[in-house]
Length: 65
Image (cartoon, rainbow, N blue to C red; front, side, top):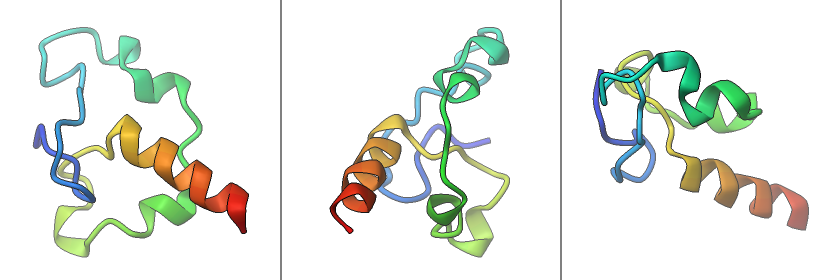
């Protein structure tokens, strides 16, 4: 797993990588749109998590549509 978001390259704050309980990670409690996940490049899928900032930015973008 990578600590970098596959969309923006920023840190993704992955609890598993921080050696914390993965179930305590922010992403376990967030709804991450499948349309956003589809933006992850094929070579990065399953290797790193999208960051919370990208999820929020997507939600703002989607709300404007």
